[in-house]
Length: 156
Image 1 (cartoon, rainbow, N blue to C red):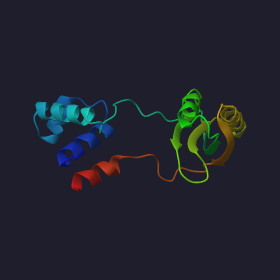
Image 2: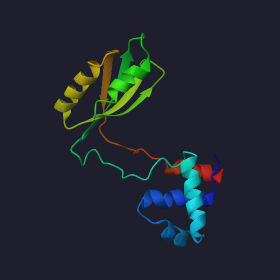
Image 3: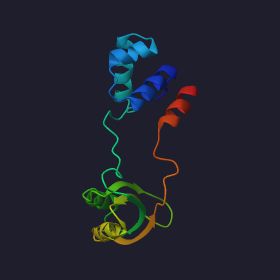
Image 4: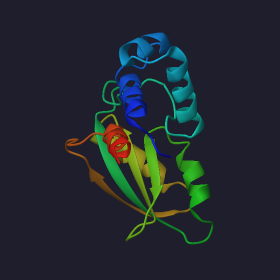
């Protein structure tokens, strides 16, 4: 979907201040309230804006260890049943089917390295998982972000 500069500024504003109202957004952007509402509705309908919920900081919740776990899966059964079971593990915060030496890559969090071992044990106990290889993140150099994509999409 194509977005323009107004869409980009609107997305950036709501990303920075999710609780800003439509009326205040229209005032700051210099457009009609109906324009802001129509743009937000279209962006949501087209899936560009997926939600307005709070961003949760796992570290602030006590999960100070982040790791990436590459899984090798049994070929019978596929990825979907494994992903459904992994979704039941709270510390698995992302899972992707991948190419390369593994079948699935999971981003996990834990309270400590000892807790990470517990999380890995839970993951390898999931039916369909044959082997896991884990790397621990030492520091987040670039956090998950999508706003640069918004600006790039708006400029062409």
